[in-house]
Amino acid sequence: MIRTTLASISTLLLLALPAVAADELIASPALRASVTVTADVVRIGDLIENAGSAALIPVYRSPDLGTTGTLTVGQVLSVLRAKQVIGVTTGDIKEVQVTRLARTLASKDIQNAVTAALERRFGLGEAANITVTLDRSVAEMRLDASNTGAFEPVATRYDARSGRFDIAFEIANNSNSAPTKLRFTGTAIETVEVAVLTRDIDRAELLKSSDVSLERRPKAEVTGEPAARDRSIGMQLRRAMRAGTPLRVADIVKPDFVLRDQAVTIIYQVPGLYLTTRGKAIENGAEGDTVSVLNLHSKRTLTGVVTGRGQVTVQGGSQSAPMAPAVEQTSSIKRDDVPPAAALAQSLIQPPASAAQIAQAQIPQAPIPQARLPQAPAKSE
Picture 1 (cartoon, rainbow, N blue to C red):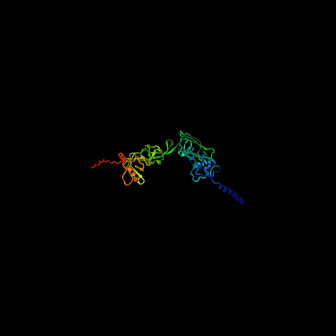
Picture 2 (picture 1 turned 90 degrees about the vertical axis):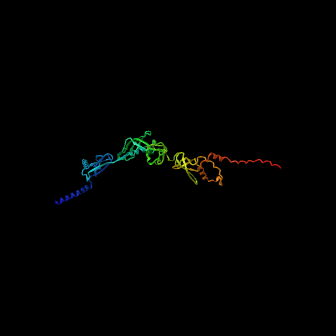
Picture 3 (picture 1 turned 135 degrees about the vertical axis):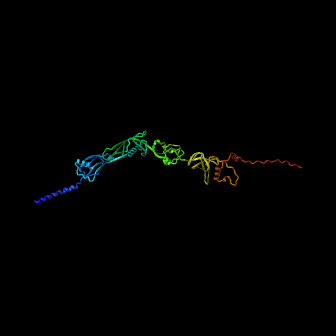
């Protein structure tokens, strides 16, 4: 009898061992401390691991797109028990954070999509030169995370006179065959980058770095070729201009190195000869300009090139006043033997001959005939 009882107990123990081993292989459900979801509901499988057949049961509404919500452990366990889920391991977790993923569109992303749809259309140029202002100010826009597609314009309208646009976009998504539709309205104008005066500038002033800033202005406001900032610095204005005025290439000139009635240094330069003398400018001129100057010593009007501040260089043969003919000189050197450089210097520096001197030099010198006295006939003796 005793042996039969022991055998029965042994048999029962052997039968029970596989069941215990099977239970050990089944992992118990465990609570997650951090949860991320993409749908608009939170399911049991999102909150706990090893949820089994209960994983697809919805228990909470998801937080707003791109936001995070917090649940206490007690709240979670209470909801799970109501769904017949028990024996959940919580460990040392005190609360559960649930974050809903989203695709965030910044205002710049929307503007870029609009400019890309308008680029090189309706008379507009490059997208980088189009400035967009949306009717509805949008700091950022959140879409479901499944919306992974690009902006695809499906309807585009634009009025070139007013700059108004109305564009409809579609964005493909992963979870639904129907794309997400978006529509934006506002104004779009083409702009140019131009140098702008930061203060009132007179014509005689040279532009400094602090006088010019770089801004984008509507293309319609800048008639002609806009001036670049780096090329404007150190230049002069053709006329006085007020602060905030955009600069065009036609508005700036090289600075005047020579001013009308200014005392200047005249440089006479020919191969083998370099002379300087005092003069007076007859007109304004920038570096490289051709101007007229008066030689204060010879009183001749000369034409030269502005080569520096208060400096005009006269090359050989550039004098504008006619030269007086040279007076014939008695010398052992013939007139044709005078070095050309010396002759130029002499003609440029010496004052012009007077009219009387010129006339005297031009009248031929006729020899005076000698008078013959009649001889009396010889008397005969």
